[in-house]
Length: 105
Image: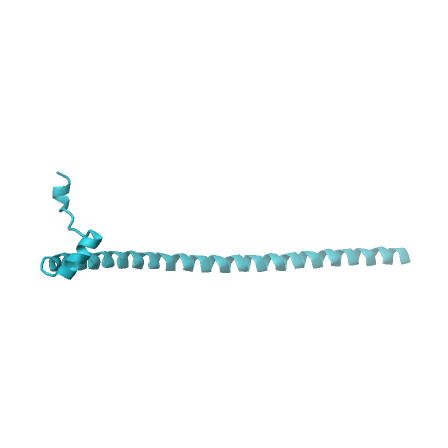
């Protein structure tokens, strides 16, 4: 009878140890799933923000290009009557581009 008690006691200890390991692994797996879902949400949000930033940057670049064209056009017009503006135009080689329809002919 003592042998039967020892066997069942050892069996309970082994089963308890296996149960603790299984529970630990389940908790670890749950934590990892939680972390990956959190990271996925943050990544999705970052992608959405970067899309907005890229479109804003493209709009800013287009606006800046238009402002630069206007500025250079005004500088070229001023260079016709102002020697200082003419010096700047000559120094940097600024000139008007031919219109697109004339350039292709």
